[in-house]
Image (tube, one colour):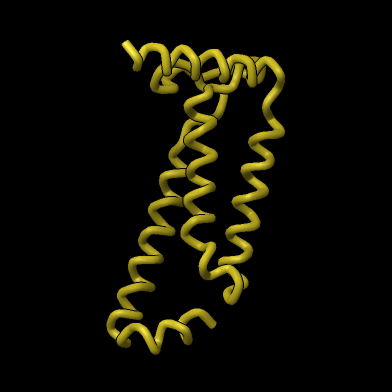
Length: 124
């Protein structure tokens, strides 16, 4: 188990603090993800509720993806020895794939154009 590998490196107090911090970060990522608006919300702050036919909001899409990547980043080092971390990584990766599969050609083109537009405004 991963905690066995921590023992030679960390004191018992430091090991305990590691797990407390780990759980706090894991909970914060989960809460952040659960508070995200749906992918099809519009407006610069996703304040306009979209419909099933609305395009995917590129910013919200990226934020959803990054929240899943944060779980993978947090649990990746533990995954080889902790089944629960392995499962969290696998679930997050599947969620990212599911997000990608929701994209239509129009969504992808809209994202590309919005990103180009965003970059061109930052250059000025």
